[in-house]
Length: 114
Image (cartoon, rainbow, N blue to C red):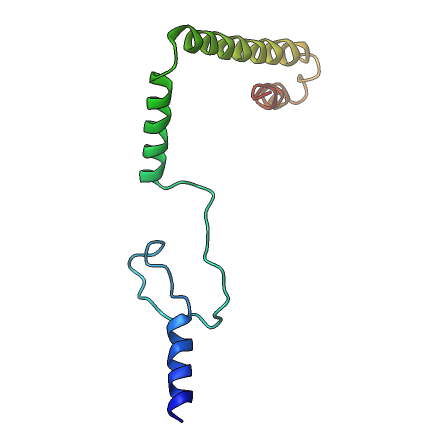
């Protein structure tokens, strides 16, 4: 019987607990299944996001200035092309949007991220 009690207490200790870092106010409690995976998030929290931005800024500060300037110009050109595409297509459907005035706004908003 002593062996069974030890095995049972070892099984209880190996069960995962509710993560206190996800819910700091929640009391830790045992979960019913011992093989449940830990919940992972693809979104960074405020601290991790700040650290990622700071690391990216430090990385950019070590790059040569002409390379950074070149990347900034290309980003501006890319946004300019997207803006011109939106203005051209959304401006060209003025006749079609007479019956539905929100159509032109929708097309503009849908095309700008392209």
